Image (cartoon, rainbow, N blue to C red; front, side, top):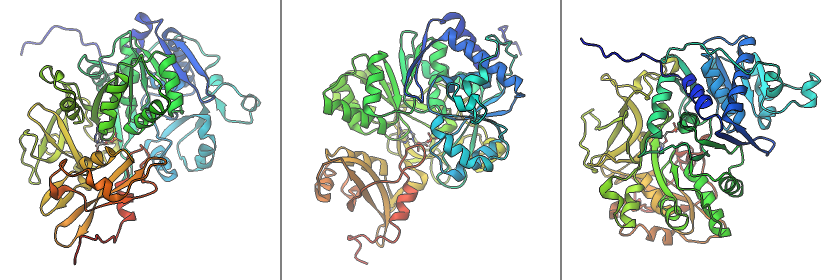
Length: 544
Ligand code: AMP
């Protein structure tokens, strides 16, 4: 074999940090902190603080591979932990504060976290659960030095932890395959599972999502990740932004319309990323108050299916190009993004929106296939529906501590647990989670499609579709809807909008107006819980 003669430099997060400091020292990191102040740092100042934290961690006895946990919203201190812990060879373990207590305990113990950094909002929760965390040695609260802490009565504060440390650090040479971060899946059934990212997977993912067709991250951009840094590394933006020298705007805990609108305009944000619920809230606020977001050019929406309203309203009213993406924690997390191809970009708006509502096409590096129940690979014709499998350099190879080996096929693919079709252009069409599929008379009905149609009704704020047992058809779809504030609509009005949008046999048997819908810790609909609520429900259409 003839080897290439190129350097073997390792792909590490330290490389991103050093590049950012050397070549983009003046770029900014803006964050809203837990005390609701907007805080500005230049990359050079950020770098010095990361060095201080690295020194403090090493002095406190942190060794290569140790897990450093965070329970925090998006701000500069959280970002400093991201970089300092990974770059000294330790692992940044982001924990979702919305999880149930038992899950928080399970995750911290399973990960064997040694340090826990947390926002002041979570102080009471942490103190309540402290006795259940078996391995945590030090608790540090992410805030300025406070009088009680200084007097030794409260938990140690972040600012005092790093205060006396040197602002330079001799970074170790790391192996690119070394673990850099750990994130647990939300675990709707059974215990959450750990996904252990490496420096290499993190870097290749960040390089890829930065690409021109995708997030197109440039130095001149100002990027607002509304998606939390505890949810799959905020979709890789904390790395992609620094890699490209972009301004990073971190919104803290306040994700409501007025708070986001203020940050978007004050910080001249050009690119924003978040889940549909956040964008629906912002849209509603902008529409009701006739406000603008002039600097925003493009946005990413993902994490669950984006309703059409987000796509056409942001474009038509606010001139923002919407990119719908699909991913999972297990994919670092981005798998596909909705960038239109050349021949599709000039289609009439309604046709374009239909394409943008699909989950996008795979980034280079992600391979996708769908298989039937026997494991046979199905065609990419936009019609065949099967279990979605993926592979690639930023896809999980096995779970931390090897739980769930059954999620991997013998020929090396990861079973996503999603059900999908793939069209001839490579666009992914997610129809369901495997455990949520509705099988009526032997045919699959997409619950996601029925939910998207329901939220297209002007009075509907949110919709969730589940199957109900039917003596003739096996299962039939029922759509539960929450109405918008002050809106009125009867179930028949809502049902009427399905006419002509789906085949007759796919029209839900019933629309049920409910006060609220259950959600998981990552804000997704919890169909498991909803099915529990409807256990034993009998359909009026079922004559038996
Ligand atoms: P998580 O690991 O918490 O990000 O959850 C990943 C799951 O969210 C995926 O397996 C999908 O079921 C769902 N998901 C993510 N993005 C989308 C999307 N754009 N449309 C539909 N479902 C999505």
